[in-house]
Amino acid sequence: MSSISPVRSQGPGRPKDLEKRASILAAAKALFIRNAFAGTSMDAIAAEAGVSKLTVYSHFGDKDNLFREVIRARVEDLLPENTYDYDSHASVEQNLLRVALIHARLDCDVEAVGTFRAILGDCRQGNPRFGRLLWEEGPLRTQGLMERLLQQIVDAGHLAIDDVSRASVQFLALIKGDLFMRRMFGCVDCSESYAAEIEATARAGVVTFLRAYATR
Image 1 (cartoon, helix red, strand yellow):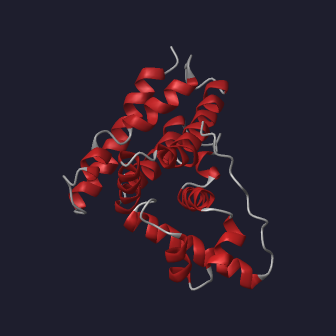
Image 2 (cartoon, rainbow, N blue to C red):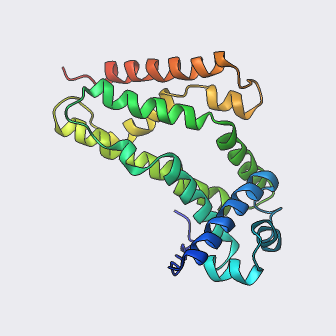
């Protein structure tokens, strides 16, 4: 885990303050993706958001915390916690397929891949803490939620998994195959065939996972 302690904002309550906060988050997200962390200044974020730099600092404290909040807000928007809720009235396959299709499509999304590219650029320049921030607020969070879902399915007697933590990582890897890396390396475009392949890979991943962990 990162040694950086997240500094939670004071949570401004006035509508105007909330609008400014949202504008700052939107500006920071756009600039981080475009210029990476190291290439994005608080001055640039303030200018993009149409606020003063002092306002940016008053809401988020520093650039590290602003970046963490951008990632947290984005992940919570795209993958809210209820994505991983266990529906006892649905089959195990339906529960897993719901998560698989949402996850695979988002993991291979152009904007998501652009964010990872920007972070890799920062890591290459000797700033690994930014990668850790992304890891903690993104993949580590979703792995924990996936682990919770699998444990509920195991407790209900529908799957036989000894190491649920490891199985959650295996599941998330199976459902996207090599599609994320192909997008990262610019080997695919936004064609309909790629979208169809994302869905087919996710469905196949669920089938494989269920075969591996079916109750005997």
